[in-house]
Length: 399
Image (cartoon, rainbow, N blue to C red; front, side, top):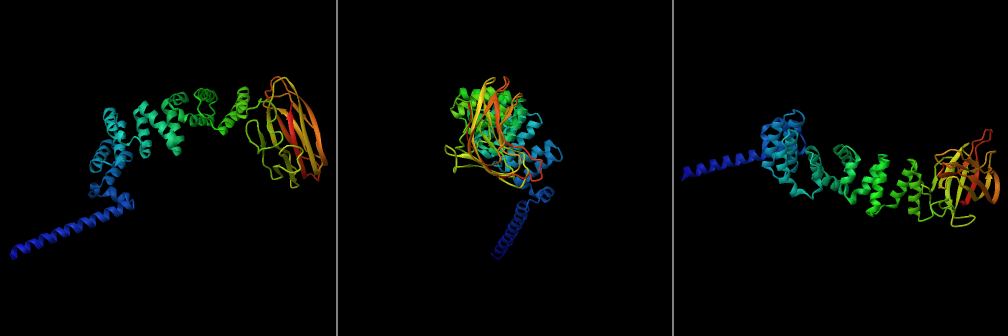
């Protein structure tokens, strides 16, 4: 009995020593892994019981040593030890794809992807894998998922999609209706005028809802790319108006700063605002206060106005001033938008004047689809040239 008890105690002691040693080993390794001591993990083979270490060593073989066979072996062991280590599955599939083993890669995809088809975390990896495989169906599906649910990946996704299909036509054909607006915005950013127009027409046919701000942005895009007739048609759709003439000539709303709306620039020499006080008519008027700090060549308030080519118009407005200094006053000028043959202006206003009605004849050249109406002031050559005072504008119309 005594001998038996002694053996039990010895075995128990050895077991406890073994368990304590294992716990120490486990503690050291988990501490090193938590601290991301990659050099330690790569150096010691005793960590090969951890799937994370195997995954790290596989990546080292793949990216540093360029040893695909050994990398695949490490990734394979990693998924055996931990089947839920999804990144190891994708890494193994990528190795097979790079080595040209499409059949094995496809088997891995068929095994793995159905179980994570709606998990956003792994969609980017699936997207890259489909790119490597040249799998158009899966690539298009994951592209649409990423565009709809992973906004931080959209630019990269569009870049890879453009590389995959070699042009924007392929992307347009494969994006779903919910992502057409995103694709349209990307076309505008890439200055793809013809494709943007084509996609816009398709979106209209399919009655895809379009944000008003995006419509205004497209209108500005068309103006900048010499598609003025289409820009005017779009402006009519957005505003619900006849599409010609000044927009918001009584300054009832804040400036659009795009398309055919008012544009207010910024200058340290003046404060530009819409005021509701002391106006001639309507809900508001333009007020410019020059602060007397600069001899400014002012051109910071303007509007591009759609017109009919070859027709005569009359610019009509009301203006008022208070203590405008220097010999160079404020006036309105009209020029052709992206066309020549038109440059007329009113007389400059200085000093203090009451509300005064003014008109200006405007003969639009045959080549002009739009004109620019601008509030201007030329710089002065005199010694006391820093302009101060106030200027108001209201009731602007081109008829």
